[in-house]
Amino acid sequence: SVRWHERVGMTVRVEILYFAALRDATGIASEYLDTDAADLSALYADLQARHPLSFPQKQLRVAVDGAFAGWGDALRTGSTVAFIPPVSGG
Image 1: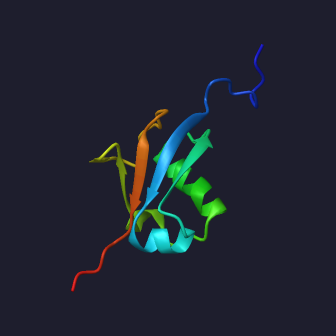
Image 2: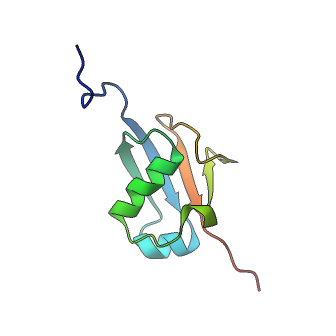
């Protein structure tokens, strides 16, 4: 039997893109990440633990493979996930 902490096959590999202030905060434009996050919200929480990301989730947009997505959407291996902070106009 599989124990609860041995979630076999739950890890997905995604590419993360950081834009604008998020790129400034992380110091990188993108990275590949193996994660067991269940959804985009959990993925962002994991990224906040790795990087100094001060933006609350509610201020960000998230896109997967070029289309805006919901925070509760599941992750799929091979996806490109973009976190987009508010952009000031001027």
